[in-house]
Image (cartoon, rainbow, N blue to C red):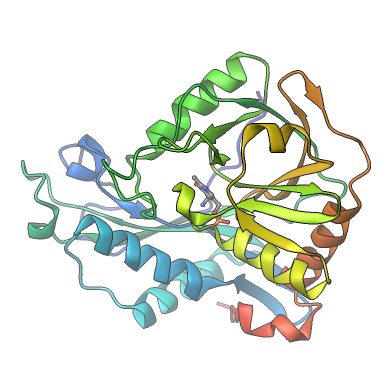
Length: 303
Ligand code: PMP
């Protein structure tokens, strides 16, 4: 196993527990916490966070969906993640802000607790070109039911459901798993990424109705594809359609855009013209080479 990069820094806006969350906290005991992952990219005018406000609005929405007690608003979160990225001194990094409970109290009434901002930062550079293709399997584990949990919330505890699907996929010799919607049985997403397919020149991705995380990379890809003149359809996607696709790829903040080479016993063609065009547009956008999307970049001043 390759050694993961060590995080370079931690910011913690909590009481004087150093950088530690007490073991008795409901965030540790029950996974009651929400988080985001944001990329900072090197651009010609210095480091910049990609779609930081969209991530932080999603963080606040996740907190609202779970009913977490906290005192943060968007401007304060934005200032904290910009400071955190600047403090790394790195041109590119991955920033993980989260709201965690610092109090070791025996309650799961999350509204009574005050959740505090913590930020972890890792060094991260853009995905090498060409990116390594992903071998996917179909997980026997479906996404959590929206009748049991709000699927739009990016909550720490729900990632155990992604982890069991990923762990089983890797044990079976694959890199990752596609998970199905609990109700419809249609394709929802992979364990930590959204999924796209291309069929006869049309870019297709599961609609948000099928209970997936509203990925910010997913949204960026939809915007960029439309700008490239690629026909786009958000709608129901069944497994047969996924298998019959000409191209399949995954999207997420950490892994960016990753092509899929295999779905169980089925191999996809090696040529991926639509993926290549969108990946090039994405790379140009995040590194600031496209002024038309400058509003997606938040500059990080030198610390
Ligand atoms: N789905 C799941 C379950 C995820 O964990 C992620 C990663 N945040 C995504 C999709 C992709 O979302 P984004 O593009 O906003 O990183």
